[in-house]
Length: 225
Image (cartoon, rainbow, N blue to C red; front, side, top):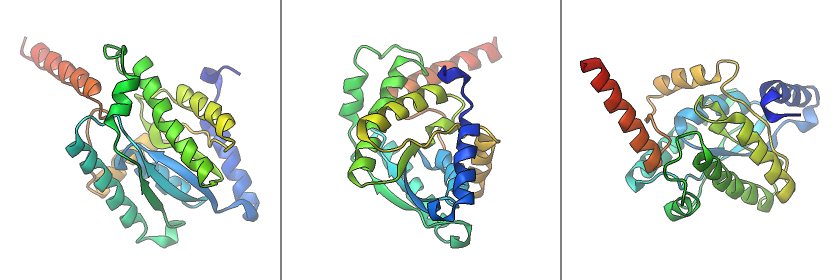
């Protein structure tokens, strides 16, 4: 089936329904790659009743180390807050990956001028998900996934395509998703406000930041025209 025709949320609903019906399958270990606390907020709230989640924070695309540190600390703060509410689901663990910006610059060579959402982003998805798949396999997690599909700016079809290919390569199941569905993105905004989470309007890489700054400047010029 063409990835663009698939309804990943319905596929996830079926998986979660099976977990609900078979108590022996609840509490499986899920390694969840996370891009930031705001995007993970809804995903963790949603899935922690089904899975024992370990968040893997691995984002070499974040160009400035100060920005990276802000985001990773917010991720840890949110998880600590969620773990103060054990009645809402399993406790959540976190693994902070290495900060490797040069790994991102290496895969971005020749793709610097690609618009956000294009080939550079696809290469970045694969970079982060491959590291997640490797860790999930090494640590014998039951499955792995990413919070990235919650963003309206991210290509859920491509993310799932990459995840499923890596699942075959590393012999660890991929948990399909399109977390923006069922008002997931809206809920993440609500939770970000509730927990006063640090948010940014770009993914983290220098190219995304430059594109966002150009858009802001163009908007300002149009408003003053």
